[in-house]
Image (cartoon, rainbow, N blue to C red):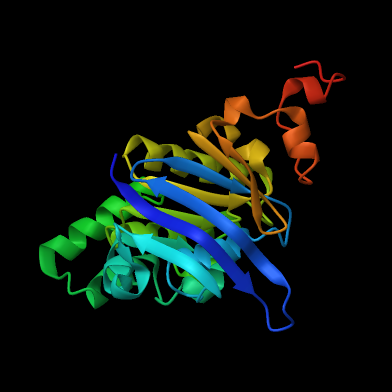
Amino acid sequence: MAELFRAEGLLHLFPDGKPGLEDLSLSIDEGEFIIVAGRNGAGKSLLMRHFVGLSKPSAGSILYRGSPIASQIPLIRREVGYVFQDTEAQIFGQTVEEDLAFGPANLGIQGKELEEAVRLALRDAHLEGMSDRRPLTLSGGEKRRLTIAGVLAMKSRCVILDEPFVNLDFPSVLEIIEVLKTLRAGGKTVIVLTHEIEKVFFLASRLVILNHGRIVFDAPPSQAKKEDFMQSGLVCPYRECYPWRID
């Protein structure tokens, strides 16, 4: 697999001198499905902001497809879709269809190609039949799927989802999981930033755990021990952690 992102010796210092990321090195290959986990404030979102060029490191380097990120921003904008926690900030259209057409149209996609991009995004985000709906009438889960569809309509090859399950009820969580299954089956590079690892643990090919801005675990999820979760403030997804369960 081709390498997509690489961070070497990444350091991010806040204005007060406190490190948000410290001596962090990480590479991500195309086609991986990665959970980047950690408690709130562990550095998950901050790391991804660096990966897409929204933050500048205090030290260290970041490469995208083997080149320094500063020279790759236009390519990242075309290839990497970032779904933020705040779905409202990523919805621009008066209808679902109009919203999905917004991003690809700004990339110069027009006519039949634009129509097909919107159709496929609706399908992959499980929003078929909702093209004429007003986004304001959508549920929280539907809005989150709409923001995912928005980056898919732009033909993003990599999708980053920041806390995709936050504030969702159980049926909506299941809907997002189904969309993630579709993305994985389609060969997309998927990076899920979450502290709710139990919801997506079974889908991932790789688990990266951050604690206080440092990587404390990086391996296939099945290699993680109970202590790896507990020490980082995460819910242990294993049955052995809940001996009282009968399912």
